[in-house]
Image 1 (cartoon, helix red, strand yellow):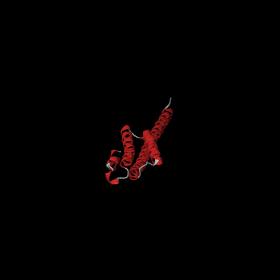
Image 2 (cartoon, rainbow, N blue to C red):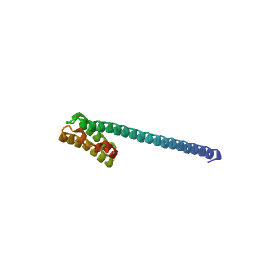
Image 3 (cartoon, rainbow, N blue to C red):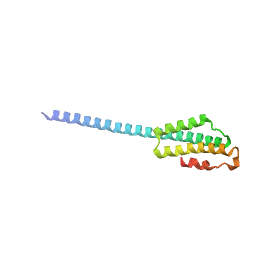
Image 4 (tube, rainbow, N blue to C red):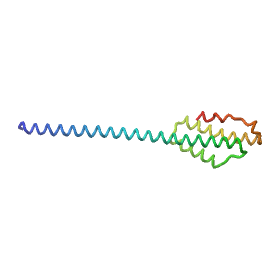
Length: 132
């Protein structure tokens, strides 16, 4: 092999290595950005779900203090949200969400037992959301 061929092969190898390095760097960058976007999207989904859950649980609890019977559609919505949380959330969060849902049921039961005595109704659930 003459010097010109060696030089040409070295240049080709250098171009190939440079191209592969550039490709690998851009792939890693794209992968990292995609992963960051996925995590941000998951976080946003969880935040929206938790916000909706807190709103519904608060409405259900307030409704249970005022009325003697629970609104079944609100209960279904609340438990539907807990079902969605099973996919996105930790066990501790699910346990807290169950406690919050049960507190609304308990308040409704207690309200029925007190038969309209709003002043005697317990209000522990006002801070029950803090568990969540």
